[in-house]
Image (tube, rainbow, N blue to C red; front, side, top):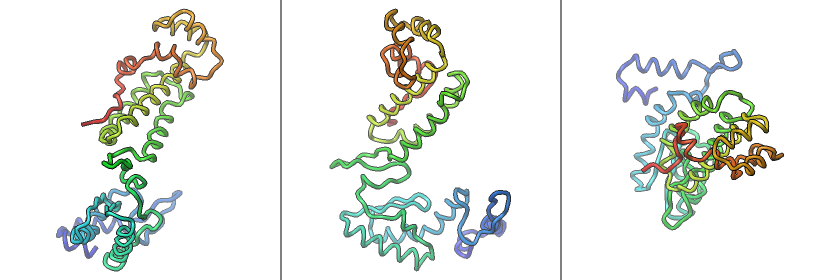
Length: 263
């Protein structure tokens, strides 16, 4: 609060921030007092991080190190592992002694750019590194898509698409800045396969499936063979019949944005 008072003159604003810090946390219907810090994910955390860690920014800049920081997440780039260990140790002491903060030792490490992640991104190990999606970001994407497209949820494909489009647009607005289009291409194929398996499940019986395939231009023999197949929806979703019946153009007509690199 003393640090904030140096920058904020409005006493009402300081009073509001103090109220946030001392309000406690609601857990299972009971309010637990806060002894330190702010609640995880609270709107106050980024603001306070930027104010308190501004001194860290100046320290790293004074040392002429390249770095990037977002709220309390920071990466510093050096030329060797030895330099990284030295910088990690000295800045840990600076943060503890000067800023009176604790460094999360479990999340702090020295490593190659290809092994570290920052805000859902990492780097390729090429001579000229490129931004790529971190494995954790891909896992979160697939997990969210599985929830929206689970075959037991019911509802029409139009309803599922309406739930998908806002998420995909927001996701692309952020992760579409990656420099590895092949990863986005594989995710797009995986997404279409998920949707094809949902549609195949909704067609339900063999006669309905056969009629739907024929209506969408699949040949007589291929439609019959696919409609009576004993394979499950996920396997049949990449079969020639469903690829013909439900091509990329069909998903484009539903308004699903294509997963491509944004310039």
